Amino acid sequence: MPKTAAPLQYKRVLVKVSGEAMMGSNPFGIDETTIAAIAKDLTDAVDAGGEICCVVGGGNIFRGISLATHGMNRTAADHIGMLATVMNGLALHAAIEANGKHARVMSAIPMQSVCEAFSRDKAIYHMKKGRVVIFVAGIGNPYFTTDTTAVLRAAEMDCHAVIKATQVDGVYSADPKKDPTAKRYDTLTYQEALEKHLKVMDATAIALARDAHMPLIVCKITQEGGITGVLNGTAKFSVVTDA
Ligand code: UDP
Image (cartoon, rainbow, N blue to C red):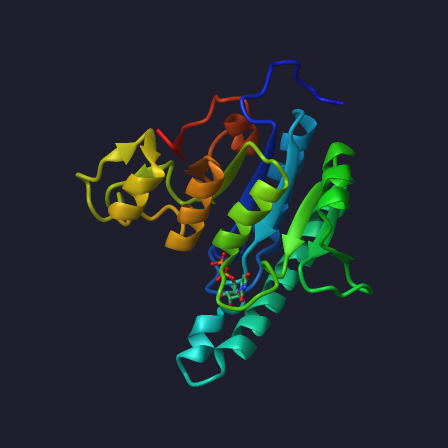
């Protein structure tokens, strides 16, 4: 039952949780305190009336490209990368359930004794039941990233936006930590993001978002109000859209 009656600006959203976000201040792996905070942020958004799904990355454990550059077959390396995302998804699921809330993990690579296989209809059913749906194993194919997966799944799920939580409160013309003159954008177009090589998501993901007319929201992971603040429009964020 929603705690607030205020209408939400975005109701059904997909949150991209990068592997990096899961490692906290550690150099790699999963930080339990960090993951518990992410879990709470997601379920708070459900309690506020949101329908929440997420795509988890795997870069905190493994990136296919890193072994591929050392000579491993890229497809094999990417399969390992996708399995890394499964570990992160299971950890996030456990953190949500430990908090007395509900979530389901759905994998693009079926592994029936571990989690559910991806199904659009079932994912929507779970979200409507107030469960956080965690998509793992990317899209199940090598040569893709979890950014692209995030946009693809958001489009399939009829989400109102993809939320990418980062270290900064929006899209900047340069890294604001290194360049004090960096300009922050409240809104920008997909074309601008692509042409100016702004660090929103990778180019394939941005191009797919443009084709699917899927708004991309960039916000700060530790912001006050969390994901709920994006849903009800009280948080600070940048939006990448058509116009
Ligand atoms: N990956 C893949 N296909 C997909 C999604 C991911 O092969 O559809 C692999 C790829 O090797 C990638 C790794 O999984 O490096 C982890 O994903 P990503 O690098 O996107 O994670 P993040 O940067 O979000 O932590």
